[in-house]
Length: 202
Image: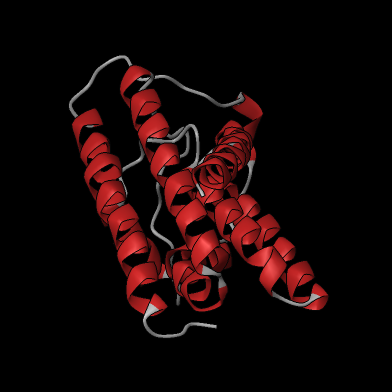
């Protein structure tokens, strides 16, 4: 559980990651809008996948998941996650700049209760910076950080949540399948590296 004075240390660690993400991800996403010759990392049959508007709930849950990690994860795991996410961001930024991608789906107006959610999302997040999916990579990092601090039933729910996040990136038409697969690989590799490097430095 979150205890003072570790609360300040944990908060600062995650705030550093948030700042790096905002600068790198949002910056490269904006720059890509001016670039030509964008890559298409998707299969044609993926474009026939229907959007499921309610899947924006698990998709957006990634934005608040750091609060859960902040509360339950140990200081050790927070530091490992900080290293992992920082490296994820830097590697992804290099890939986004080298291989700028464009979303294959045509963004559409979603009528009903989810309309505002999608309008806000589409305003903030341009249809670039796709492969690898940091959404998936971040979610995996949260799961790996929490799994040893919660009971078995909660761990099962956590893995189900990760599966929903992976599905949501496609079913909200925000990403393609290869984006999610590469996000999982990136998240796993960076977490394992961060844990080894932290243990060696300790």
